[in-house]
Image (tube, rainbow, N blue to C red):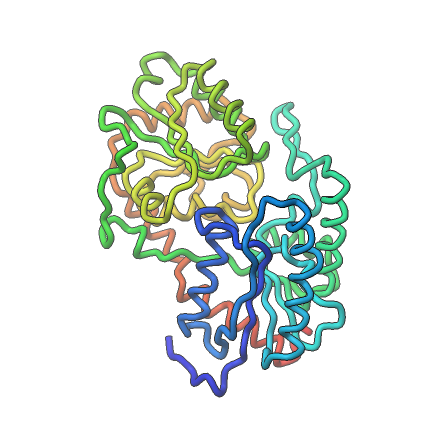
Length: 382
């Protein structure tokens, strides 16, 4: 993609709150976004800087940074520096949008699950989507986030499903669906083959479970389903849980449930990108029974690595896969049958999965982002 001289580029200030680890979901996408913007491949735009603050465990300092000093720093930066556009990299930092900002502001919306929590009923089981009972301070925080989002000039949504939710809750703010990207070649084992992970077991199938333990992820459903397999089938696989745990208590509950159902579970936790990609490349399958996703990044990552994916037939992750790889969210027997079939399959690189992942390339994302931002300056969506 051609690059434009810095003199003719719009200058973008990228902001978030606390500097989340790149090993986390939001932290990783923020880091990737900055790298893409700095690469010069977002035609017409370049990174003029980024604002964040170091995480702290002190609750008073945390509140002061989040609600007072950091928003003030953002306001000062866009009023005193030569900035053309303020971009907030996730909806949980929308409170940073100043009132009556003198430049356009865009926000990348991953989901609205916590800002507008709801529930789903799946086969008689009530699934919480987002925190149903936030505390007093969090309620205040959520009000600030909703107010901030209502001040934005453009909401960039990571899926059509998220865009629909955004349009329902913020009907006066322009919204565009812009699925995020990954470095396709880094995941492809035919281009960037990585060694077999030390924590994998060569004597059985290695299945992946990637993400948090939020109720919408439906980990208990998956473990109960796996537990209903025969003892012989259960001896053929081990589940590797990757991703920072929501809390020590949530990890304890999941591990206890796995023991009760005689399911082999290896808790890995957070890993760096190298180890994550290696895990995808050598896994027999990714199991993804989630009830709701803003995007479902693990599905795309597994596809790019040529790994088999079994996912529930619900948005937004269902948009990534062909129908034959989707399993009814309401049918435990369908999941049991799909997993049983997978246990009889050898570990092969799926050319089909790799092919279907190509639409999430960095080049395509950068092109779409450039076109969306340009509309702000052409007065088409402001």
